[in-house]
Amino acid sequence: MDRSGFSLVCFNASPPESPHKGDVSSPAAEGSPGSASQGSAPARRAAPSADRSARQALLERCLREAHEKAATQSSEPLWHGRIALSGLLLLGMIRGIAWWEGNVPGYSVFGMHFLTTTADFACLLCALPLFTSGTRGQCVQIGCVGPMLTLVFAMTIVDVGALCAYMVVATPRPLSPGAKSYVDVLEACIGVWEFALVASVCFQLVLCASSWRVYRELRMTGLYPPGSNPAGIGHIEEVSFLELICEAEDAKFVSDCECAMGKSPDNKGS
Image (cartoon, rainbow, N blue to C red; front, side, top):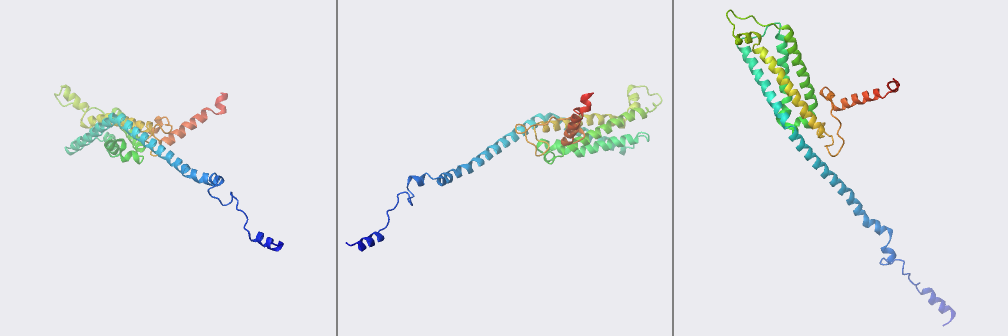
């Protein structure tokens, strides 16, 4: 073979294939970073979903325990409040019967009896949803327990003020001729309207105390205000008596302002 034929054979011959180029079954291809990242991607996606499921299960368990604790601890004040509401309803019926029979309070004390009657009906209308549905009712879910507590507290103050004003203004009725028994003396001092006034104050105090106990238990378990973390998940703020007249956020703001004023440089220097 001459030199030209040997050159033609070498030109047409294909170069030898490298064992590492294009071989997908080679060890280098199996251990490439791309394949490792593709294999760990499902594991990374499964990890957040597992954590989310665990947090959801923990939240549901804490909510269930909080509802059970609130229902157990609030059962007694709920029954006390229901009895007080029944008593206020009975007093309203007694007042209506007395008015129907022509027994009308005097002009000097008419305004006091009107105030206490209005306060009783306001408490009946506002407190009835909570004490009939309990701690799982709509009143708790929409955040109406705080305003209801404030209204009941205000009506209790009105009732106590009306009783104090009556003790100052009212005078006992004169006895009928020849009446000397204790029953006649008692009727001269306390009539049906006076009895209703004193009983109304007692029932209002019981209702206010029961409402506060239910509200405090809901706050301590984290079920109120709506959207709060239940006990066991988040930090439960201390329940202040200022929440009788304002919401929890406002009471916390007032307490923080008082603490800030107490720690001011002027007070430290004094």
